[in-house]
Length: 347
Ligand code: NDP
Image (cartoon, rainbow, N blue to C red):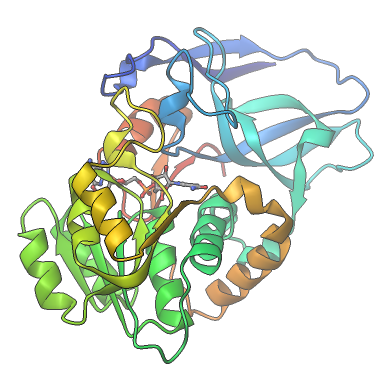
């Protein structure tokens, strides 16, 4: 059977900006017969995520993901449907997901590497399994609960950077639901600012590309900042931290502004910011969602209920076609997405 797949064509270099030409579309042939334990899946949707940037390097610099190899099929989060199965855990028609789904229109995978999911959990929006009711939703919910220290009635102000992205858009809504009286998002366009306030119930939003972030933060957070969900790092985070209150909390979720640079993760802070953290007793602990997977089932159930009941709104940017994987990844890394970036591969 002929299928299409995406392989890594070249590496951008540890200090380079990824470009679509780093990926290459190929035709490939699947073996006609399944072996014991294998399933044939048709890919429905694929995810592109910031952590993939380090997989484009020869060494990812972290121990929980491996580099993609040149000329080999790229992989990441995916959802698909089982077309035939020689695995007792999966049957034809099952909807399945994996964190290591090949960027391929159809694939033969080990049934044991797949997780069967119930489409009713997401009211049929299967791409939500890659976003709000998947890993980015989990990151937002568990990041807030594990590191945010939000207390109902405590009059807390929360700031989210990367606020209009997959994690940020959910994190801000969790902050509001959990009791922050003010949730301010920082993001990179007017459309994103509008979506945060009009569609997601943020109190206010700042366009960091056009506005004076320190001045806007002072205006929008007159009581200082108690909780900071940090997706971006760099200068934006330095500015936020400078306005944080004593005994406040940074959720160190990600540092995307530094991902195209050859720096360790998390990137080192300036002495001034370190001094601020210490003087104000601000916690800033690294958060990695993979360390909390024992809490995933309960958290995913909660997320699905919040989405179904409309307490959390889900934003997505969807492009069609496996030939657009590289474009979609590079676009997401530059802010082309509002909400979760999804690539629809088949109906
Ligand atoms: P997003 O959907 O937020 O997409 C990335 C966004 O980052 C872009 O849309 C862009 O939005 C923003 N961005 C890109 N470059 C910059 C920059 N230089 N300065 C400021 N913003 C920038 O991705 P995710 O929600 O999937 O991921 C968000 C963060 O969460 C990432 O740092 C990621 O690594 C991290 N993460 C961490 C996990 C964990 O376990 N700790 C798990 C999953 C994700 P804009 O237009 O606003 O610039």
